[in-house]
Image 1 (cartoon, rainbow, N blue to C red):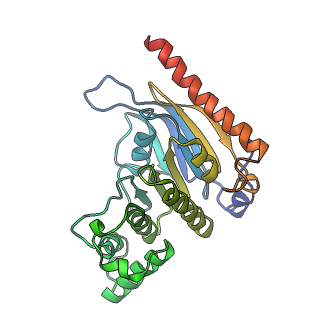
Image 2: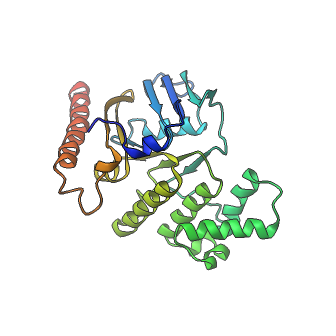
Image 3: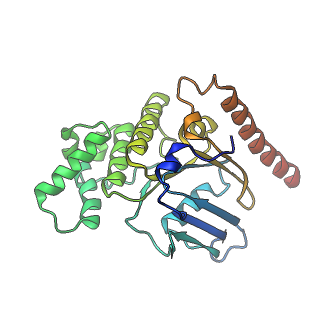
Length: 278
């Protein structure tokens, strides 16, 4: 299934250049000899849904933070179109596992805060209308506007975080294990929500997960990150016309073969480091 990503790529045929280019990227924290990421190279075209897959501690979230501009490479570079990413920007929306909502502000105020940064100068009514539209897009009603995060369930808080990210109309959405703390039913509903929003907007999405089945359900391309230091050890593309649904992902033989290969690659990586550490 290592083919191009189907008609979504064709719909973006006017984009001749990668939206994101990662070139010879390495990263280690200052005053540390431990290399977290090494020699990462990646080209991403507009509209792709990229899942970074791998075991905990392999550097997936660090790579996402580098794409967000929250960390700086030790060497190499990340380009957004032709411009080097040097800091965070409103052209990239970020959704974290811990929701990222200020607890002293209502859900509406949290979303409005992001909007005032991206679209300064709107009237109060215009901001409120945009917030309510964003809440509606993620399946929440207007009453959520006035509620504090502590009054919301985990699923509602994560919907608000997604609404906040989409409301600023970023070109790229970065999601760091956003459903990891949720129950299975809520997680499934939010996976379906993100897929629906992606299909409606053609955003380029980077999604961190350690769940093989989640990656298979969401991604047009899965990139497996190995550990110590983090590096790309395997990559697979899923053409959009072959993307599984929740109903077919355990029936499609090609998807099942890919699932087994992804698990094999991760287990092989774990085993190689277990032997080396013994």
